[in-house]
Length: 80
Image 1 (cartoon, helix red, strand yellow):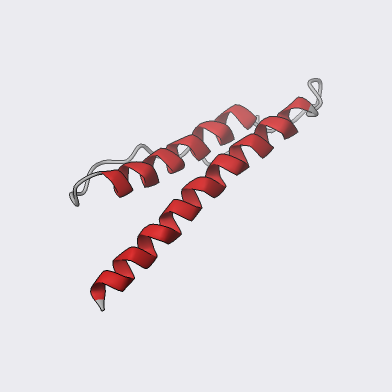
Image 2 (cartoon, helix red, strand yellow):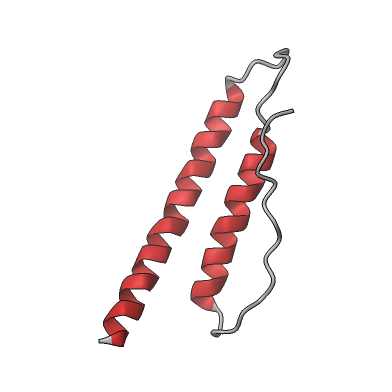
């Protein structure tokens, strides 16, 4: 039934949101060991912002009425 699919999707999305929170913690930890004088630096700040944006979008989808809304674009390029 459709209700089972909706519940399964909501569970999957909730799991994804939780995984994004865990990934943010991992990114913060990795940023602590990043070399500060490297010629090319990974933009952990951008990655963390994008992870937060994705997690927030999922949470808003789970909590909000079923209407489309605009989503801010991801940075995507994490090198300086």
